Image (cartoon, rainbow, N blue to C red; front, side, top):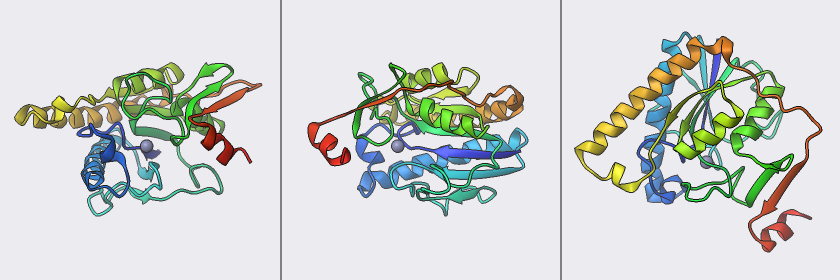
Length: 237
Ligand SMILES: [Zn+2]
């Protein structure tokens, strides 16, 4: 089985500030280390569960977030965005995708860094219902016959993802500052959380035959509301 680990960053263990997700900031270097560790535990879990091949696809912003010299060398790494042949590059030979460090949908009150496909939309709807990235990317992968079998991230993000992907295994990650700034307690929380990532990824692989490609039957009515008038003018040429 060829497993794709798709990495965002906002939902990593250890991350509680927006700047830790922003490319080029000092804090982002810490965020990258957090994400890389999360991904490594998921890689280990995938191999524990029987994966023969693992490919990590780095998807946040420009797609160069994982510290490649710290990544488990058994996995192949793809950084940077592809626009061809598909949104995620050449992925048709993947059997299962595990989505690490996701965030909530645009318009989710009180969520950490909520957005849906870049930050330009205040809400994205499919057939009148607000959707998150797992609806959109899940359906995209579903068209190619590839199920998402695992998600990790903030509790509300996981809840939204599981509405679209009820079969997926999941790990919730706390985003409150005090969780990561309380000395030994914090270290223990992160350590246990990453162990859970590994265990849950292994479970996802073991139940791979129950994972389903997400198919949203048409016709599809897609709506996106821009955050500001200026953004709408910029992108609606
Ligand atoms: Zn992101």
